Length: 72
Image 1 (tube, rainbow, N blue to C red):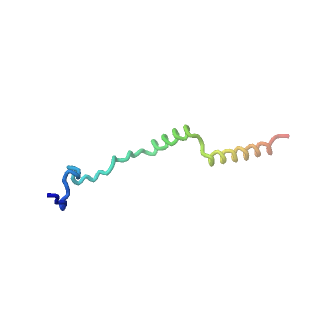
Image 2: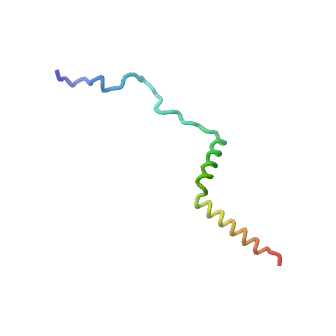
Image 3: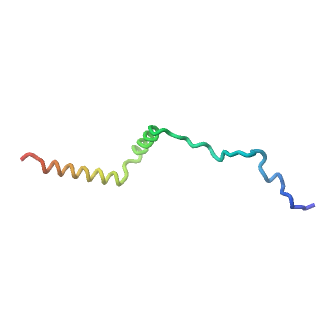
């Protein structure tokens, strides 16, 4: 009576067998779809600090160039 040498079969899931699918397959997007998704996300979140500083430096450089080449 109280023999615990064999495990209770109700503790284990039934069926399934050798199922090698561990998760849902990943959705693979084409390069165009990835670029489209990235541009949509960037439009929502805005530019990063690095991009903002790079743009500011470029604008400063262009303005200095315009100021230096003004006609007298």
